[in-house]
Image (cartoon, rainbow, N blue to C red):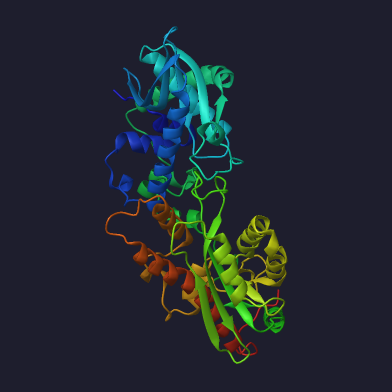
Length: 451
């Protein structure tokens, strides 16, 4: 007999085809995937939330807490993050933990499902709580303060109001699972999830359509160039031209003092500088210790980036500008410096953005990230997939592991710094080479589209 867990129930509620696929082919090759570093990172983050929540709840001497409580009955097999049993009444409270700054209402269905599973297993359900992260919590020099870090939200009334609907949906799901056959209509499949197993199994050709936004024009071997707009953009650049990129560490549990959950804390930069003759210099900063490096980083950047001179090119300017404002707030003596930087920043990505860009290529497939544009324009140059650290998320995760002493025995800090230098340096080097590529274009000779 099928035993329902919250993931199966969620799939039934969102996509019957996917639910059918999972219960009939649970060992399918489509469910097997390589380890996901990002998923592992967030799992580790949730373990920390679990630790702090347990520490907070254990201060109450009227309840007995159990982590990752497995509940199994005739109809259900579930795991509850924290079960807290009241010693006097015997009622059991549910605490579900979320790696988020707030609770999303659609998760109420999960909580109602867990309540019904708890009751079906013979427990007396008590209250239902969601534990989320307080985004305004600021870490001090000492240990994490769980009572300040976590928000504990009582959702009992909302869950109780939802129970009748969930019972009905559960009844439908069990009846559906008893059917001997189910006809799937791939063309009418309504699920838009990129990892939908039903799509992978029955309509694999649609995956590309779902995962990519393609150019709205007929593809061709030539790019579409708004010639005059691109010429005007290039003419406005002022020398020396700088190319700037930051790497930042971010986590749900802040690792640096005076930082907040989810905050992007800059720990590294790469800076290339091009003069009027096209000669290029490179500067960088990577900390040599676990101490919060803000002041040293700012001083290094200040010494390598001339004030009031030259355009500063970045890729996706909202990130760098936001980090500059944050660093200015933390170091008021450098406020003018950072606001000068922001006034000179020019976003290279906008040249290649499908909405209003000046240079569009079919092989961008509607994307404008540096890692998509660079290999299309300069296919013979070093590629990101040859690096050990190939994207900003990986850089952030590895630096977080370094700070929390979880890199692993065979991963030295020196090796990590070398890999981070290679990655961040390639970001600004790629921008240099893209700009030289644009300068080298004979714009009068290429196919253009001024519309």
